[in-house]
Length: 239
Ligand SMILES: CC(C)(COP(=O)(O)OP(=O)(O)OC[C@H]1O[C@@H](n2cnc3c(N)ncnc32)[C@H](O)[C@@H]1OP(=O)(O)O)[C@@H](O)C(=O)NCCC(=O)NCCS
Image 1 (spheres, rainbow, N blue to C red):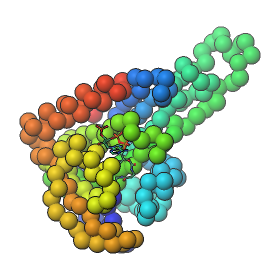
Image 2: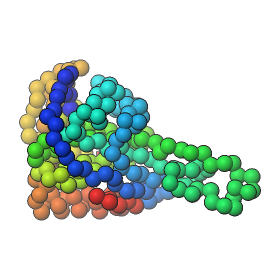
Image 3: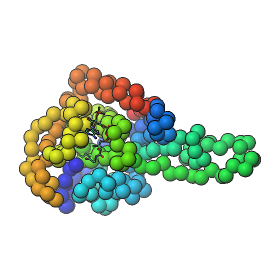
Image 4: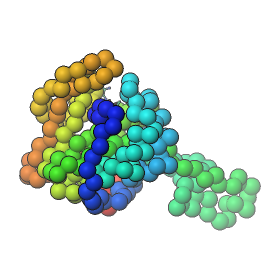
């Protein structure tokens, strides 16, 4: 995770971003009766994002930092991963669906309850000239280990590629072996150290860089990532 420190500012530049990625659904319904969706983060998502943040980082960003990222930082792009209850499995009604069609409502079924899809992860980056700098990625602890971190990183690659970036870079704590393994599996390579970068314990940050996004090698890797996600989920990108 990036430690920007207080008072970091960014020059304003206008950037287009793909507005929406469309549903992902667990293939293994017995494990998770959920659909997944990647959406641009909204201010109203911040309380849920902070909840995930607090369960994921020793020094969580405060809500105000996310508000500034969304409202003031035109270089920032954040996605939330929503988990949407499968409409065939519960008595919930999800925005945009008809979970209890006529005539079931006539036979004593309780009225559908509007459920706001739960935020179960998020990720964000800053687009700076030709590089995407990932500032944060996190998944709720109870949802980890099923490919959702990679799904969020796929979203980061999509945004970076669509905006013409050539590389994606990030910092990660030296001791964060799970995240480091994820990034290595996505083709990131070690590229240096920022000594005592994390202010809570003076831990060093490892700097990692992706492959050149415009090369065939990266396109092949992204194809493999998509194939892996396709095996785990039913999902599409509208981007
Ligand atoms: C890092 C994080 C986002 C990964 O999310 P996730 O949904 O568990 O990740 P995935 O299931 O997509 O797994 C991706 C890779 O991470 C590694 N990984 C995941 N869980 C692991 C574990 N328990 N032990 C070791 N490696 C693990 C594996 O390399 C895995 O790839 P594989 O499935 O091909 O083996 C999640 O652990 C998290 O939110 N951690 C706290 C916040 C954080 O550290 N963010 C990174 C800041 S730089």
